[in-house]
Amino acid sequence: MLSVSIFVTSRCNYQCAFCYRHIDKGDMTFERAIQVLGHLKSLSLVEGVNLKISFAGGEPTLVPWISNAIAYAKKLGFKTELITNGTNQISEELLKFLDVIAIDIDSLREETNLKLGKSRIHVLTAENLIQRAAKLNLKVKINTVVTKLNILDIVEVANWIRGRKNIYRWKIFQFLPSYGLAKVNESVLKISKEEFKMLGEKISEMMKDWEGQLVIEDNEYMSSAYFSIDQTGSFYVARLIDNKYETITLGRVEDFTFKKLLESGVISKELVEQRIQLNKKVFLE
Image (tube, rainbow, N blue to C red):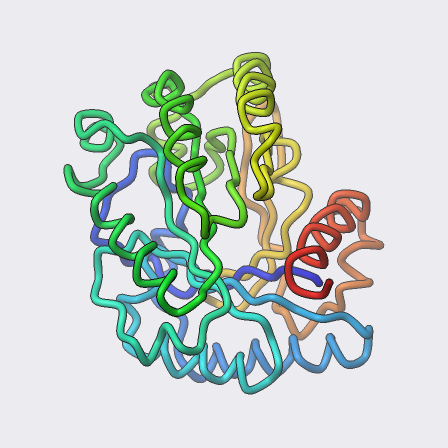
């Protein structure tokens, strides 16, 4: 099962210092979202692939039509995921159209969350959403971005995740300064590949008997493994240029097939296949 992420808005009620949302592109329109989903459906039929659509932002629940878009994606036969900070009101109507709800936990410490641009009660907010998801048998994914400010807190997060049974996947990302606030705050937040690798090895050892999927992604992985669509309805990737990560727009979704994207070399066939197999274990087996 292939994953595609649609970033529907730059709006957010948080100001996360590490965020690479496209702050200058506003909202996707509902009409454009329907066009994009329709094209993705045609690609899935022609290329014979199942799709999971992740709706992201910014904070996607700030877009008034998000429930309708998710419902339409579900009607098209896609698995659906909402990536949210959990702070905005999420209706029962919206939740019933979801297969996965993803929320970020970067630290359990109030002071660290404040430094990162979140609220003091972010973890409590996340726990409330996780409990709601459990009652509806929704799968829960946790995303963690590792920066200089929270790298020492990740072991605590690992222990927290081990104690929650309905978390099916934990993704740990190396801070990627490719756009927006992330680029502005690069010098404050950046960690080296070696630091991230050492942390990954430590967490892998801690979680080796955990039943969920642990996915650890450095900058090279993140810039090569994702089908991402911005608010204009264009595919984009991050690329290392002159030792700096930059976001590169590839073109409107209608101008591409998945095969064309993979053959262009901008996205790694090997890494995409790894992600397909992870999804297959969860959704298709």
